[in-house]
Image (cartoon, rainbow, N blue to C red):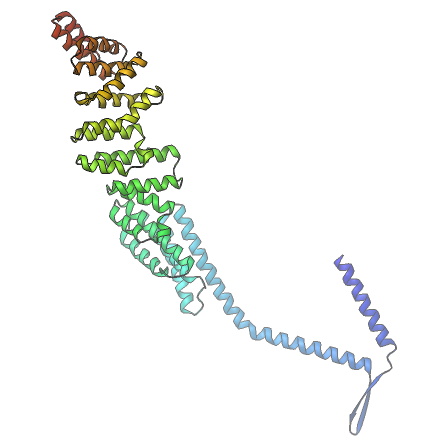
Length: 425
């Protein structure tokens, strides 16, 4: 379609020229004394057009001739730039492929080529970013080669090329370099250096998922459990882990923090610093209660921390894992000597509501035993000993039954109970 339009336009120009030139009787007279030159107007127009075309072509040819040295120089610079970018891509490719020595050599070659271009006055506009990237590739390869001195040298050069108050791209490069440096320190098991690197990051960059992951590992390595717990909470909110993984990490750190308490007051402070969802975890509540009892804390406070777990086990028999339920029973058993009337009523009501639960029967039997209710204690412990799945509690039940038999003077019953206690282990 376009060719047809051009053809029609060409025919139109030809027709217009024929109409103008065919009947044009005009002349142009040039006086050059003593001569007189008469030319037709058509000839003059042709000569003017031809002269313009000739002059224009001559000027273009002269400009192209004068431009040849500049084009040759630009071509040489372009080839050097291509070689520089090629060396940088080779460095990255070798690093990803695990050829770290070749990667470092290629990165150094790219830096040398960029320096040569800059010295000749033909530096690339993104020279600072290119140098920073090349230094980081060389530093990463040196880290893989366990060459710490060379790694730190290239890292410092990269940070110099990416100043803190540079452009947005330079700031991103600097933050990335600091994160990589923190990761390298973590690989060297130097948690203090890793945390110092992360502290130097701006506030926004320090809250990124990558930085938080590094901080979590460094804090755990440095035994900064409180910082590690706070970081794990942030990662959980950012959905850096699956819900189950995040809960497991938080639970482990909180348990470690509870275990690090040296006295009851410190443990109270740690417990209050936990979030409500964390205090609702059965394993944490049981562990905190056991730790508080071991530190000589108030027995009423111990049972107060265990109350939510107890209610969960009583109200939802399948809502508490078996090993958690057994830990709860042991924790309550340890404080039966100071058991108040309210808790005694809770235990009796729970056992009566669910008499088939051997764990509740055992706990109720032990409560009766502490209060010297020998008959009821024997009945409950006998019922529990025959049904308890846990060997430790079963052995304990038979042992207490043996002691009760000895108090009654039933030597045969006591011997049988001691035998079953031994076999339960």
